[in-house]
Length: 320
Image 1 (spheres, helix red, strand yellow):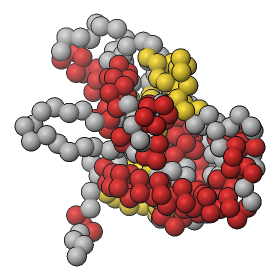
Image 2: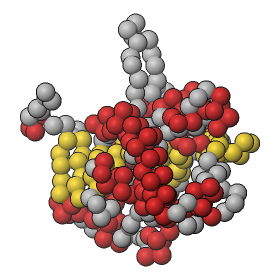
Image 3: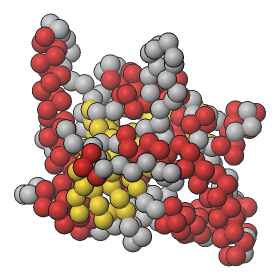
């Protein structure tokens, strides 16, 4: 029997959409309609009201968090007598997690656009953990192609080294580039990150931990490098619907290109394509969600819960 938790013991304070929107206060709206259209994902929906009521309050909160962290870092540098080393700047790292098709990329891009408008964080970079997937050749050799997106399909040491270098202020730091068109990591292509004020790291399993060693040996997790984390949440049946809808849109757009890894799907009938999308979801994405992604939700500092219309209906913020 599932253990019932007293709601009063929850580490989160939950806000309705209306309650959260009030926290925007006088934060100005810096994005125009055409910018909002560019920021939304293929099968996602992003309105001006969504930005105003959800993301502007969040950007205000994050600006406060970043300012406090910058102040603490300067005080710690002074305490350690490092105040005269470099510019005293350490990137603030935000993790964005959630299922396939939930809209992580849209959230990450909107946060990047808004946070870059704040005076204390003019440089905001964004990377996805897709670039840290093992190349298809390795996944095929190891029998992991059906586990692509699962924790074991990533080059975790490479990702941890990347985040270590970012936090250490090394410059520039390069991340591998992933192509959704070719469905593979692009050899010899990199994304350069050069000492941002904020780095947003978006990915399925960025809040994932592992089994702790019995001897207490230090084992770093990706989330250890995060200063703040966001989990995008939605019910499983809604996520399945969004995934199938996105697949069908890609079938008539990107998949039509003969060079696309998924070109073969463009030749399916509509019924065959829907059946294929449903099979992929149930065989790969749903197990990954249930086994690896959803269990990390309670590790996030903020949970954005979406309704079936793609709009965020509820916000849960971890209490200080």
